[in-house]
Amino acid sequence: MAERDRDEQGRARNARPRDALGRPLPYGVPGIATMPDDLDLPPEDSLRLAQKLLDEGRPFHAHEVLEAAWKSAPERDRELWKGLAQLAVGFTHVRRGNEKGAITLLSRAVQRISGYPDPPHGIAAARLTDHAGDLIDRIERDGLQSITAARLRPKLKT
Image 1 (cartoon, rainbow, N blue to C red):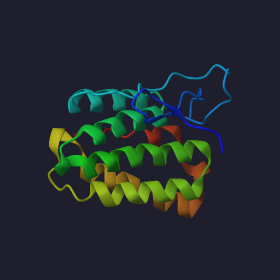
Image 2 (image 1 turned 135 degrees about the vertical axis):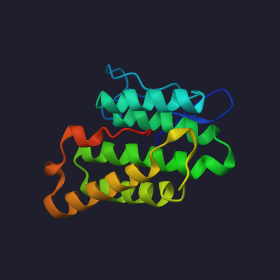
Image 3 (image 1 turned 30 degrees about the vertical axis):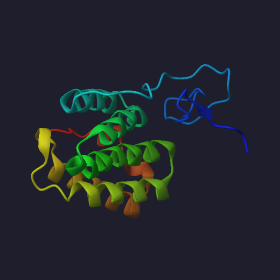
Image 4 (image 1 turned 90 degrees about the horizontal axis):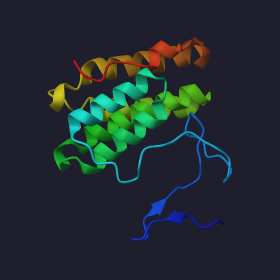
C-alpha cells in the first residue's frame, strides 16, 4: 500500500491533484485547487464560502469548507456541521453518478441536521432536510438523471 502524504506533525494530507468533483488524479497532472488543510474560518464565513462553492457547482469543495467548520466547531454544534458536510458530499456523489453513495450520504445528512430544530447562524436546517429527503425520494423513484444541477444548490441559510 502506498504511503499517505503527511504534514510536519504526521497528520495525513493528500497532496494529489483532484478533478472538479474531488476525484484524485495522478501526481503531476494539473488539477483543481482544493481548500487548504488548515482552513479555519468563522462560521459565517464558512457558510458564505460553502454557499458560493455550491452555487458554482463545486459541492466537493463546499464539503471541504464545511468539514473544516465541523472540526473547529464547539462540541454542541459538531453534528450539525458534519451533517452539512455530508449533504455536500451527497451532492458530490450525485454529480459523480454514484446513486448508492448519494442516498447514503444524503440520509446521514438528514439524520444529523434534523437534530437541530433551532440551529445557529441562521442555518436553514428544516428546509435542507426537506430538500435532501426530496432528492432521496426522486433518486429512488427516477434515478440520478432526474436531478438537475440547480437542485444541488440549496440555500444553506434562512
